Length: 557
Image 1 (cartoon, rainbow, N blue to C red):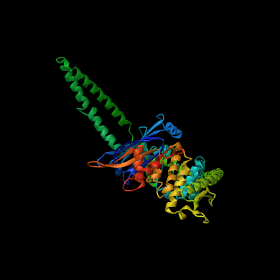
Image 2 (cartoon, helix red, strand yellow; image 1 turned 180 degrees about the vertical axis):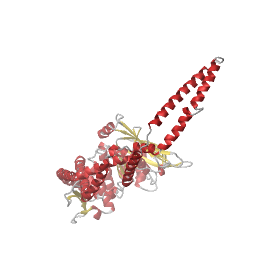
Image 3 (tube, helix red, strand yellow; image 1 turned 30 degrees about the vertical axis):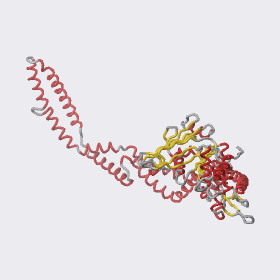
Image 4 (tube, rainbow, N blue to C red; image 1 turned 120 degrees about the vertical axis):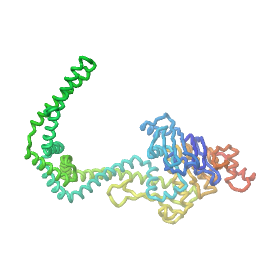
């Protein structure tokens, strides 16, 4: 149940905190007072898309908070616990909309995506808009209403799960069958390419090592020439680095007897002298071990050339040829086994279809049973709502194809006959605007009785009716609130008079801005507001008496 609604800087609402209770609560007010803003705020908090227009002018952001008591909502509590949002029996939903249009959503102070928010809040609040009768004309909506009424959600999910498995396997099967038509040509090409690559035995080639050895052999003369020159500079030539260090050491050693501080310098020079001797020895050994091998250089150039030609041919780098060969082998293996996979998929699709058929048949049977009950209840409700000759029918027909389909193999059509002797026709073809509003209301109230949603909101669903019919609508909504919370936006005094609680929405004209406020009416204030809704420029004693009679006559609950 919704305990509290808090709004900050949303459109014409500067700040609003609204406490709500069990039972039926109506919201009334003059046209343009801001009733729609409350529904906008609820929609945002429940996961609707947001834009920068929602933010009150000159404010950084708008904020909506909803506080729920989940004591009587076991499914919602289980969802919170399963997703680590558990906060005992309380739940706080928060939605922020920045002035740049970006928004954030939170469940129990943890950030969530809009999709997650929508999945959760569907278990808490259900909104019936004033244009619900328009969606009622759609076949999918008629099917959904029937399934909801018949409590078919679990069976429907099994049917759709089986359908999705069949669809996935069928799609893969169709794709493989298309590929199979050109598989032989592709397989021949792959075998040719693999034969060419396998003939090289690519595993024995290390392209980086080949190029490194090639660079060394290609620069052999330069290596010997520069190497010998540096060997002379270091050791062999007159006045080499080795000779100069030796003389420096001799001279400084002589000075060491006069200046002991030179000990450290002499040690460093001695180490350098030794290092030069070792470096020269290593360099000499390296140069003596080198031998020119023109034949190896030619062979390396040929090998590198072959690898580079193949890499250009297959549009890969030379060092990626081995991985490319592996990919070709994998593709060839898949092609070679595509016939086996096709046979397997044909078996799978047949199995899924075989599993789907009895589930779809069971769903059809459930729909047929539910349709009979639903049409009886709605027909009875239509008569109560001022259509004494109205008959409502729910037609469930099997679709022509036996192939699995989403939501089963049925078409669901709502039909009505508004007058005696007229054959029933689809809802969209025969219902006038006023009739459609009443039929829509009858369906919403009838199907709502079997739902577990703790909070239901009706936004001017009573438009287009009045008089005694409006009073019956109010009674139905009040009865509906016996085991849940019902919020109703209305312009009808007959509906407002049936409520347990009455909220009044009004505009306040501040110095620099217009703002909407909502307040709970006392019993006497309800009399005045009900009289205003009854009409008349001035509130006469007769009008007030009529309003008082509507409000305080004995009720069954």
